[in-house]
Image (cartoon, rainbow, N blue to C red; front, side, top):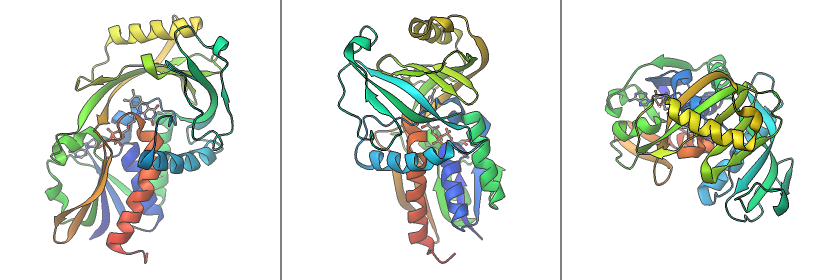
Length: 315
Ligand SMILES: Cc1cc2nc3c(=O)[nH]c(=O)nc-3n(C[C@H](O)[C@H](O)[C@H](O)COP(=O)(O)OP(=O)(O)OC[C@H]3O[C@@H](n4cnc5c(N)ncnc54)[C@H](O)[C@@H]3O)c2cc1C
């Protein structure tokens, strides 16, 4: 019998699986969609932790400590990028200002019209098409395996491993019978725009201009309870127009690729153990909403700690 099955190969499943396999647990990923077809592909994906406290802050902190060294690893898809993060209201100094390489308040007279607070920061930004492949190949090189399989219920795998880690994103609504999980529809566009040197993020109106290792990602939308995953040209035109107001050179960009995906919404992240059968426990790890990358490594560390409690550490 395998030690551990991880369900899902988005950023949450891959990070948890890699952590478990690296700690010596024989781990298999079972997933309906391979990494390049998950919601995680559509993400920005900026390490973004401004309003977080409690567990979320602790998870974001751990992730930051894992992402910063990855910005030095060629081929990881993680880069360090300067951003203007602006807000509708004046903001207190970010709690992480001493943990990132650069953080400076923007003078009010240098802020765009309509916003009242902002910081210039250097933060890790992830290019999912590169990073998800990187995680998968690290996992497989360490001896882990990935199998395409859609599950109707967790009970289907209760006899295949002692510990199941449920990283099924919005799929947890059905798989774990958790009606508090809901989709938050997103849509993004990758463009060739090498002239954009500085990132921009305005969460109030969801204006994102993210220079990354694979191009400049523009977005987006956040539509709660909307299951539609089609790429809507009207949505793309609307966010392009907003981005061009910030950066006029983006008015008619060369489009490389478009993405859509459902963020796994929930009132809080579910990271806890549940008994599936006398011999099998499930560690739920889903509901990361709009900040799954930001929380990914912190949650993966907690999954490992829970697995060690369940299986013992003598690997
Ligand atoms: C447009 C957009 C922008 C974003 N920007 C950011 C950002 O800047 N920073 C940030 O930190 N986060 C961002 N996010 C959020 C982040 O992408 C998500 O929180 C994260 O992708 C969730 O990852 P996940 O692995 O839980 O889910 P997913 O990526 O959805 O993966 C779920 C996995 O579970 C599998 N699965 C589901 N049901 C079953 C089943 N029944 N049987 C087998 N397998 C199953 C799926 O096939 C898939 O492999 C963004 C998201 C979007 C959509």
